[in-house]
Image 1 (cartoon, one colour):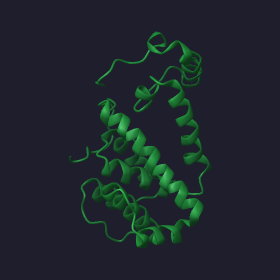
Image 2 (cartoon, one colour; image 1 turned 45 degrees about the vertical axis):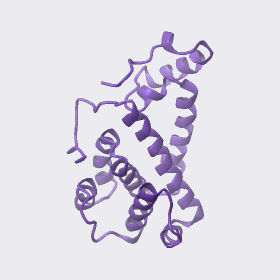
Image 3 (cartoon, helix red, strand yellow; image 1 turned 90 degrees about the vertical axis):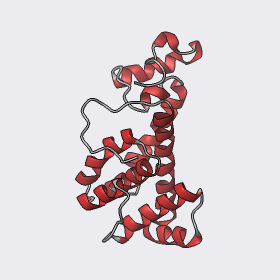
Length: 184
């Protein structure tokens, strides 16, 4: 149960009700996970959806790399909701079970492909130190190019925003939990 009640049209400020109505109609009134929080500021939800759409469907990054970046972000920020939502998707996108399970359990990750290692090292270093060393940056840039690295950084940042909303407002997991919980 989240720390706040579900948003309704009446709970939204008058100046954002048209945007609320637009999102409500587009999503059929369904606001799961981070959207259940972000819909309280409909313009934030709407603008975030545009960024999400590009990062998920217009990006040069493969689905496997996108999912790995989301899982790395979820693990580093201890976000159960995002982990549960993306672990199986990561496997379907080509991540080996060993990678997903060891990432979840904070065990050593061995046998990573160079692009996988670049994502995990980049994300872990940033989330743990709030910076990325030149060496880590250079490895990631060599793997993805400037555009790809910009997209990777933005994708991790977007999922950090989602995790912040989920964790701060204590959004619960869906009834159909499909993944083993993160050990926190």
